[in-house]
Image 1 (tube, rainbow, N blue to C red):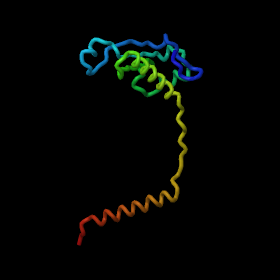
Image 2 (spheres, rainbow, N blue to C red):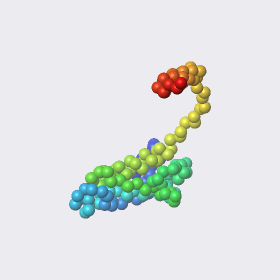
Image 3 (tube, one colour):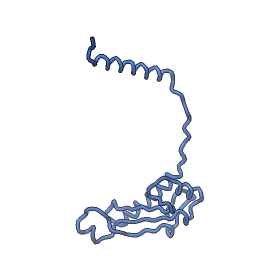
Image 4 (tube, helix red, strand yellow):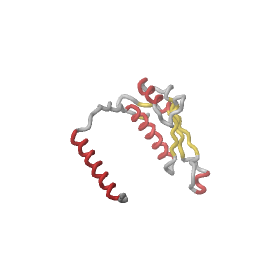
Length: 137
């Protein structure tokens, strides 16, 4: 069971884990040992609350397919157990980040002092650049 928060958790049967061979270099061991983990999680069939499902499906993430299936491939570590823990941790982080509500930005005006400082720095820059130019007669 994967605990997302105090009142939300995902059952083990909802997460499909399969061991695959890792890609990349690693010598002869990489060709015969399936240490990488391929995690598949169907959002629509899950027991997550409706709010979680809607936000996950509408999220703009390359790990979520159009059908609402989250696919995570973990192959950073040399052991299958560590890759499994990594994949589950990344699934939990993905769900948590989707649920964080962004604060509304309040429109503000720059202060008079900041406007004045900006204009004086622009004027100083202008004079520096003018002194570097060729003198025209």
